[in-house]
Image (cartoon, rainbow, N blue to C red; front, side, top):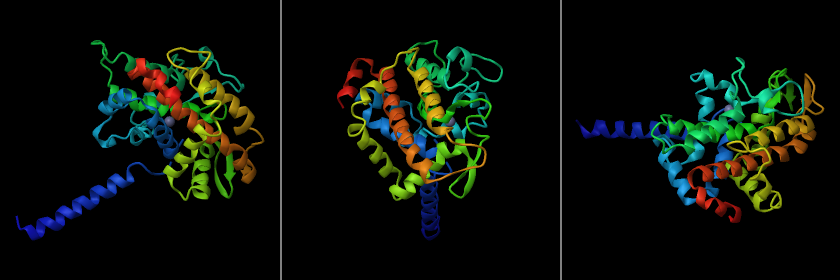
Length: 300
Ligand SMILES: [Zn+2]
């Protein structure tokens, strides 16, 4: 082939590849940014053994970054319809959560909610050595990392009647949206724009500096729970519904306009939930892949 023709073509393909890769982790939307942040926070808390095990399971497209795969479960939502109820749990309009009452899908199948999913995928990964375990463990890992993020978004454990705030129409400053979206995406986007120059890594650094700074006295308690099944996910849902009643739903009605007052009082909750999700994901993964060295993260 004439090198004068092939060379520009070669550069054209490189350019297209770079553009596609650059676009991949970003987009419209614990929207994409929230999930990426949770996993970026988790990553430095993984022990060496855990990091290696995670790396072995990640698909090539992740390029070694767990965070690149954390929005994946939302991207396959329409393809994996059975997994749709696994992103959340609803309560019957009450400010408490009970696994036996609330963790099911619309067909009343038990365990088909975000808490059941976290326990289930943890269990699949724990049994990775069993010859009878035929699960796709790459998918188990990507689901687990995503759902630990979801259960920390308070409105992913909200009221059934308003679908976790999805049917509550609000204005986020001047923009019409719904309450669920405000918590998934709008508050994170506004914070990134107002305080972090639209730089996701800068917001991650800001949240991480609070883990060793402002929240330092609480951090140990984040890794424990009263209500342990395979994981502490039950307690994370309980925390979320309490945050809904005390913050997310509070003083919000159909057609409310939410602005500075709501943003300034709720943003600290959003940041803390992202931090908790990141640390707890690391704890769960270390427990799965490096049980003996689990203690290391406490002294990180
Ligand atoms: Zn989700």
